Image (cartoon, rainbow, N blue to C red; front, side, top):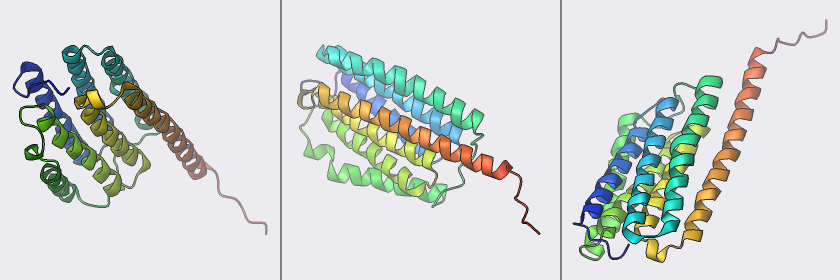
Length: 224
């Protein structure tokens, strides 16, 4: 999207959308409830689908319409609903107790990472007037917040959400630089992430069910 102006209506919408995506990453980092993890991730993916659709309108690239539709249907709706039904309703995962740092400390570190993203990939280092000047630092900050969530959370599900947030940050930057980031590359990353999510979700379910079965099993009696 080399030709998209930062001050155009589409550019303003994409900038606002990217800010909201960053805020949902902060919301995940500042929460302890699994249900909210999934809600914020789903909302972030819907916002990402809106960004991809805006890019498709501006560039006329049909491949971006495909990615926008897949992002909305799979990442925005299907994954959060399926994960909530399995993890929250079936396995009764409520509060994430495996947190290495306090929420306030995590949010302060997150703010520091956002500042670091702007220092390293700041608007002053990008071409004046282009949308990448606004989006790339934000997408880098989202990626770093996802990585931080993977570090400060010890539960596998929370780390998985952090990994998916990282992929959303990569996707946000990719649709901004769509002229130099081919569709086949982004589609490959997209489906790799979906496959990885399904594999890790299956592993999480299996481990949780085994722990539950072991805790309900009657104790063995030692022979006298």
